[in-house]
Image (cartoon, rainbow, N blue to C red; front, side, top):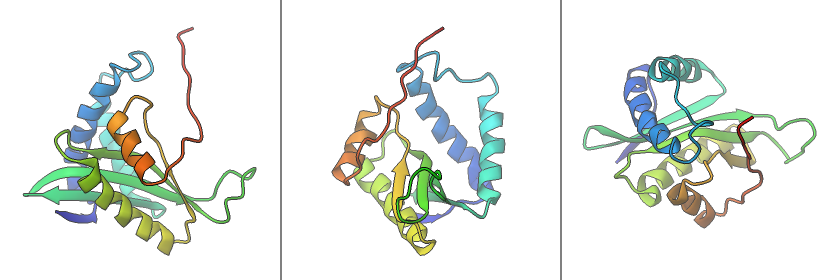
Length: 156
């Protein structure tokens, strides 16, 4: 497996992989996670913006000439009411292929992005993870991540 910096030419595959994951989220909370009709186009445009940002670290994992996962992180200051001791590595889009293993692909992506984030002064990693993404949550827990917040939603 090869971990490398994501390029604009990777966006289509990243979005397709993300689309599979987002489809599974609709079973958790159908209203909150409902996908827009043009979600592929919107996410493609958003990923292109992210990949062009100097504060973003975007990596892909390749295995056998195919994309087996990706991770998009940004190194940023914590909100001013918190003082973790330096910049924070916020990992929002972090997805692996359905048949990949979090302990393999997920781990290599995480280690690579955290090394790059530390080089930029980051002192803390924050990973966004849907509540019912059990494999991802278990992977994060095994690596010492703590649940610090949850979103609770209901229809109005």
